[in-house]
Image (cartoon, rainbow, N blue to C red; front, side, top):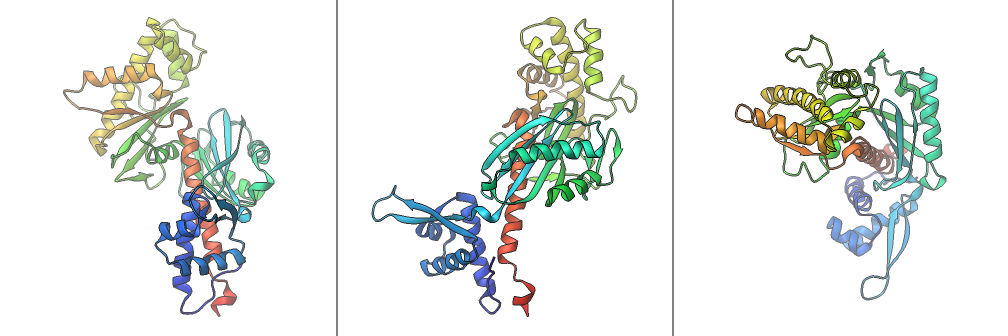
Length: 382
């Protein structure tokens, strides 16, 4: 792949090239006239940069525009060989993989079981099998993967979950097996990032996403940016102290749901979604369960508000179920005279984490590709 020549014009040519690459990544195939409109560059500048990018196999012909009047104009797009990225969501039982190109277009998806309690080799094998099934030759080489996973994730990609800290072993093993950069992020944080691109959070400069997936988690956005905390612990709200609960007891988990089901005469082995559906259908015992769980979530939201005061709370995962949303609003109304709380429902529901992973993977993939195209080699620097 060729790069801009060193010399007085290097910076200007690189800036123009980045503008064109970003336009093609954002909009897809474009004509020269459309690139001029997107970038503000002259026809001469666009033509010169495209010639350089074509020689370097960074862009390729993408047919002709026959939808407008006049002679058909040739379109160009990012070259398919530039590579792809993987966006991954791992939960407590399964994993989903999406393969995407630099425009963010999803090329393929696969889902399958994931052994959360398995050893490192089993987990890496499971993820590699899903990735291999999703990858297609047309996608080009895999350049980067972004993985959302339950647990506390430090800045260096180390994971701390119910099995303890892994010291970054999972990320390192995947990078070795897949031959690309792997970025690990907390699943709820990715869901919160997804909301920044959705319609629900439009106009909100700060919000907290509350999601239920076996347990309760939060993703916190302050002044339009995700707040991870110094050690990645921000948002771990499942163990916030609450009245009548022992210190360290979970606010909401599979065990809590089972205990409440037993107390209310329902099946203790049923997952939360079964009880939610029953509550929506009017089952009195299930409604009582949701009222208790909602009360606990309101106490969590109230605690966050007294410290950070977000503009709203966005419900995701099982928390976005209509029965739980109704229970939360009723519980919030009871304390509204003391502490008003605003609740909204996620734009993406149970897919929020994967949507967030797709967005992050797209951004990282573009940065990697553009850097390779535009960064001069050691030879051209001399």
